Image (cartoon, rainbow, N blue to C red):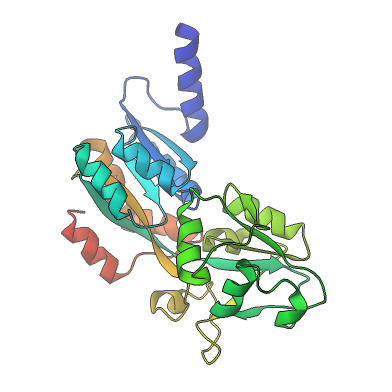
Length: 290
């Protein structure tokens, strides 16, 4: 039993850093899109407050929300909104989900750096991922088959991209990956590959071309790397990134969220490659008590 306890403490320290043994563990679970961001926020928060103890793990937005509903975590990271069925289940479990926006993402479509295709419409991307467009020559590229990379079905990004871009079902040929970093690495090694990743991963990855996207054939092509285009909605695959809690938290859980929303916390958002929240989302957070 003592060995198990020591291993558990070592694992938590490996995830985030060495923390005092007498502090209650804050459990944060969910979205792989923002796991690196939230881990960094937690690290800096614990440097300022050595009594804080935080474990941040991924698994996808659905995993995080399920953990919150079942009382297995304090904060659920999510790249999508909670759905009606999840809310119903939460309320049945005496859990009242409260949403906070901590960052903004320009969900980025990426291709191999040698691919000549650097602009696509939403319709073209949807047709590619539905398997209707199968060769790069059909969208102005080289004559080679398209390799699809995407997220697993428990990912909020998987669902968001399906609803916003595909408006249908993914092709069976799509290779399902665990997170944005895996997709980026896969596309970097596949000259015919295409994937979608959080903008923080797109900014950081060498060997990739970030595709500019037009809402339709008559619209201007916008880049997810352009913060203004993301903030004003001209980039058509922008989205807020969330954390969910049960009601209004107290103690260090509330302090952690307050830190993430502070000027220092939002600076970390920018450093990790995402975009800081706008006044609209700040107002929404304030209404939720943050």
